[in-house]
Image (cartoon, rainbow, N blue to C red; front, side, top):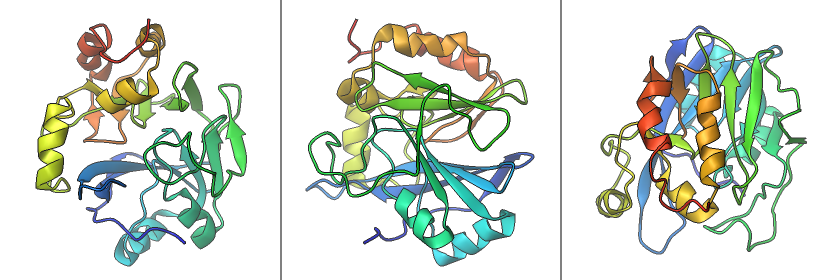
Amino acid sequence: MHLPASPHGRFREIFDGIWFIRGGIKMPMLMPMKIGRAMTVVRGEDGLVIFNSMRLSEEGLAELESLGEVKHVVRLAGFHGRDDGFYRERYGAQVHAVEGQLYTRGMNPQKADPYMEPDHWLTEECALPIADARLKVFASSNPPEAICRLDREGGILISGDSLQHSPEPDEYYNFPAKLMMKRFGFFKPYNVGPGWLQFARPSAADVRSILDLEFQHVLPGHGDAVIGGAKEKYRTLIEGELKGCHP
């Protein structure tokens, strides 16, 4: 049984063949928390490739279909993935997930039985359905997390929970979420995901290795797109304290 569609906006074509769309999600918690998230769609060799999948309304799906044929879904974040199965059932899309990720319900993906498996397990050595795309996997993160780098426009990073850009709450946050996420350090520009650091506990060295990549732009799973100068914009926080990391 797939979860219902989330509220969302319209697609924006950020670069040629790359679209970004923002929306919301209801968190699986007792408190009715609704937060913002974002999805990226890239035109690959055989069709559209979805990153950070977000189930859209019928109107949104019609807009997606106007961009091309949905062929693949790539899961980057260990705490995401709830809508991957919808796109597999609706369009016959192949689901790709980082080796070691689990498809479970709830807030702890390590303490429940998986309800599905991907069609393909991914490592840094695996080819993606986009010719110039490569993964960087955070091996110390639990659950596993990855960033996808596209070798174009000076380097484009597509992130899940690791790199975020939410200077302030958007219209998809409800009042309880605004209060809690502010206390949690969520609302900062060019941010390293505070929830990811605290709960997945990647090593500081692993996080700082992002700066070994060449990139100018970031399309995050939470917040807005960062276009131009992204590496320097994120540098201060990446080189900073990184609360929650283990040594």
